[in-house]
Amino acid sequence: MNDQSVAEQYLTDALQTFRDYKKLAERAFAQLSDEDFFKTIDPESNSIAVNMKHLAGNMLSRWTDFLTTDGEKPERNRDLEFVMLPKTTKDDMIAYWEQGWKSVFDAIEPLQPEDLMRTITIRGQDHTVIQAINRQLAHYAYHVGQIVYLAKHFKSSEWQSLSVPRNRSSEFNAHLEQKMREAATPPREARFDEVIDFAVLPKKD
Image 1: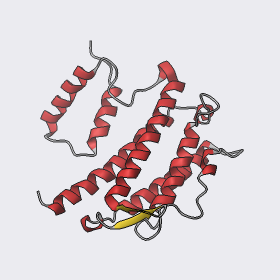
Image 2: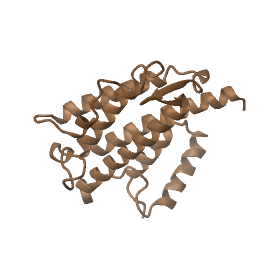
Image 3: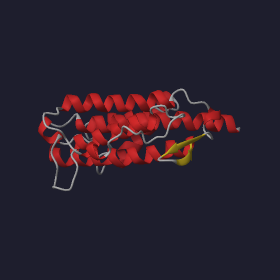
Image 4: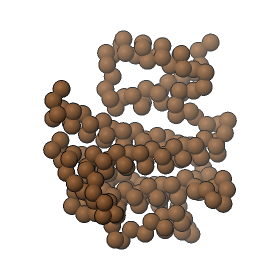
């Protein structure tokens, strides 16, 4: 495998991983009432809505004019991302969330292998494009994990699992092996959906 194909694979995988994290968060907060969407578990914690507002604000700052301007835009007010303004609705937050993710995909989809070692800045510090992508992947995974945790906490026994359910790992492995035999190697984008599809199947006796 040459350097070009490695770079192409990296970009493909990074883009799909961003899409998987977006879908994971959305499958979590779709299970919630509007009340739980804005609820916190203690005075120092953030709600799911606040996590989404922060992520979207970060995305719009980091990915707008990604290759040509600093990732920390002068107009960004990071502190306000952690404040939920009165009368903000769930639909407002979802629209802002979609706007943020659009900026991610609009920036990454056009990237070419030769772009990966270009230098961009975040708060005046130099990053290669690879470093910048990895930095944001780690950051978004952190907050998506918080969103899923909160959603699971609020739904409790009514939670619809988004991963392999407890005590069903062997069953999932057998299920996946069967799917592989039926359809050869599934595409990369099917991996996340395989787990979701299995999670909703009734447990075999």
